[in-house]
Image (cartoon, rainbow, N blue to C red):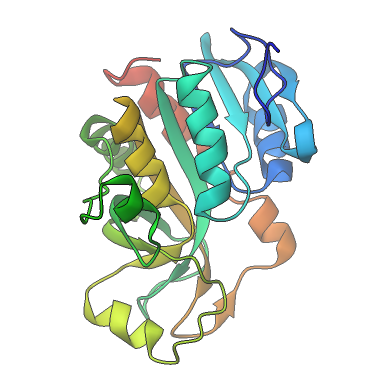
Length: 241
């Protein structure tokens, strides 16, 4: 078997840098709109993956699905089987600050979690799941140079989309959490486990305190305006591509 149980690509089909939105249709749109010489490298379970180039640098874009178990499968196989060196999650999140607006950007310097996955991975201890600093710095500086308002701090990766604890939002807000997602803590832990790099940049799709929500079309097209910040930061920074 040249691929893995979940990815049909051959060795060498993935670039050393992979951008991972949750939605495979978003991966397809981003690859077709922003990469050159794009080819599809995965379609198993419709988790679409593509490889092309940006300003001469190979880049892959592939969906991760929703939740930590799903991104863990794909990130593990990309790191372990395909020798991917860095994964940048480009996803959506629920913003927790009342002055946020749909489309605002959040850089996850660290990712707390209510999941047991990282504790089980780390022998029952609490693991501090943090981003790669060089990736974080390069994307942050690139965004500021382009005039983007990027908030940087702690997010919380939750196993629950519909949380049964009615006080859940209040609890995480009290701890200064900027936003909720469902993947980053697992991605960061896997990157540390394999000695690779990872970063999450999130577009606010729901402002939880105000109830503002993005449409399905807006969610699918998220990052169209900022994808070049990420790609330029990878190209112009000192990270290995």
